[in-house]
Image (cartoon, rainbow, N blue to C red; front, side):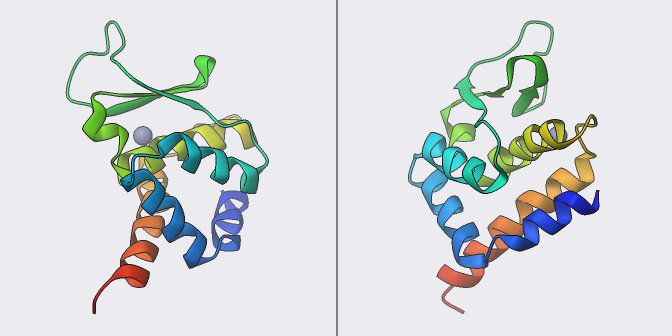
Length: 123
Ligand SMILES: [Zn+2]
């Protein structure tokens, strides 16, 4: 738990905002590669598609045994919050045994989105 928090803090806001921008600019794979350099993990694959038996309301899903993020459609593929949420599950399963809670996955994603808003925001 603290491990992940510490790592997240180690990434500065500028980098976080760059990651978000890459996803918005449809360079999701590149963003995940860059992130994975920081975390020293193999980047997950990200694909558009659904999983048999998992058809329902979720926008995206991380499948641990495939190390793959499934995005429901291309809109989701380029949605930073959703992508980063699923990416959190990827690093958590790399760093430990637990995929992490949904709440922490949301927090993780939100940190990046907030950093992006702070830097590009016109406020
Ligand atoms: Zn989740």
